[in-house]
Length: 163
Figure 1 (cartoon, one colour):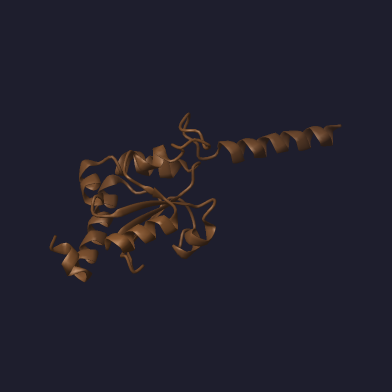
Figure 2 (spheres, one colour):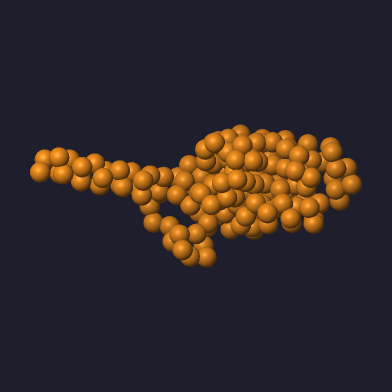
C-alpha cells in the first residue's frame, strides 16, 4: 500500500512538472489559431521552417528563425520584452520572420543548432548564418544581434542594401 501511494505521488509530481513547466499563466490555447501569439507579439511571423526559408528566397531577404515551443516561458519572456521594443520592431521589418516549433520540427531545430529554447538564428536567403541568439537575452543584447545580422546581410547583399 505504501509503495503504491509513493508511486502515485511520484507520478503526480512528475506530471505536474511536465505539464506545468515553462508556462506563464493563461494564454492562447495550444489548439487555437493564436497559439503562437505570446511569441509573435503581433509581428508577421510565418509558422514553419520551410515557410520562412521559401519566403526569404522569394523576397531575397534575410530570415529570423525563432526556434521555440508553445510551453517555453523564457521564449515568451524574450518575445514580450525584446520583440515589443520599437527599435527592434523597426529593424525586423527587413527580415522574414518564422517560428520553428521545437517540439514538431525537431530536424530543423537540430539543423539550426538549437539545444534549448529560445534559440534564434538569422540567415541570408541562401542559408548562410548571419548570427545566433542562444537563450534569453535582454533587449540591448537582442537589438545588437539584430543590428549585426542586418549589417552582415547588407555587406554581402549590396543590391538589397541600396533599396
